Image (cartoon, rainbow, N blue to C red; front, side, top):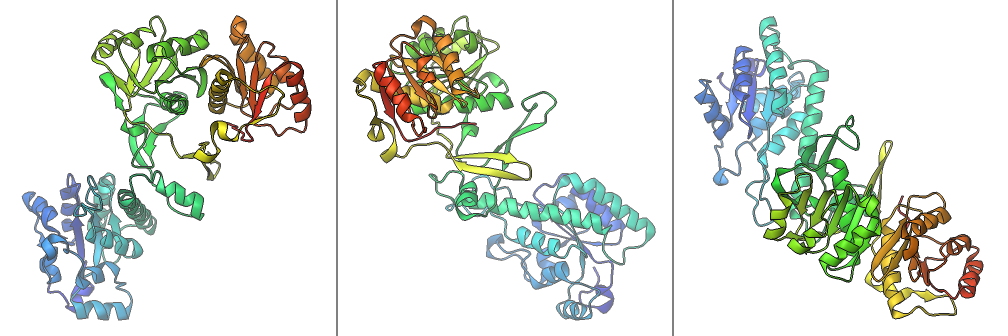
Length: 526
């Protein structure tokens, strides 16, 4: 290498600096850089890799004059290296400073970062400091420095270097401005994502989706996405899709049995099913099609709840996703006999149930031992995102505590229990939604209708001769008495109230001998 600090060194072709975690293929870039007249500078592990491929290398610590210190924590944080990355060699003052430091211009930086597996506040050695600092410097100075972070760009970088070598034109920056700017953008995004992953690792365990919460509560922030796995396709085969996580905990913790794959639609339905099962309570069962309930039951054994939830609407349960807020044993598994189930989503599966699963070739079984509801709902609109807190109920405002009985007749204790279940099922269904419940089991669910009375008719039709003695829950107010009129045979109603015709609806309920509760809480789900 030329003596650092000589004037001709400042104007020389300069340095290619290599410091990579992903080493496969980097030797090809180094060979092309040598052929183009660049001198190779590298850090320890990368230097060994390049030497093993017959490439002459100078260690970064030797070049900087500082060596590696603090047990390797400091390798490249040196003025001579960063002057080479940040120097504008066509400006006289920068050339003077670089000469004083003995810094050669670094025209190419090839750098990717330490992996962050296992990083936490108690385990920080895997956090890359020097690499991030070099990437920021090179990306800032992109008009002079090409910064390569992704092995996918190695081939193109080799082509640029070979072109420069053929043309003997390496007197300025490598490649085109458009190319260097594109590489710089990738570097900035890598640094951003890397820092967000570290911030996520430092977040308390109970803080779910901290980045999204920051966006919602502070009005700004970065939403970090990390791919869990690519998906075969989205809602339809022609739609490309992937599965990404935004928080430490979530549905990515699942165990998928027998090596089967999970689809985009499966994940949506699994989430909807488990959210309802968790809301209903221990051993509850939820049957979901197209993200809306077509069956639900709670209050019995898991085996009883499975049979009852499937019976809500057995026709719609065909090809469904079933979630169980508990562990399924052999007896409970047998309750699904004769029914095609797309996914069984459970907190546990006994050895006997696993044996039966082996005979159900088309059923996917997925275990999530400690499921949780998502605290946020994120949806996209063109050019942006809509973020809201999920429809969860604070302890002081949930359930019977804030119910208002608005009719002459109070609901019985049995009706109160079923009213709460009906309210929860309607909450998880697509608006407009109503649910008919009897003895802890849904007997009819109407959802996704543009008219509430039509949703009632759907639920009544599904219930059939099971309608008498049921209670009805609605996700929003009844704008007219006709919703109650269409459900003759019910004994009690739960709804938010708030219609300008509430008094008419209450009068009809009183005349029909119904008990009706207002919750003052709407549960729209669009």
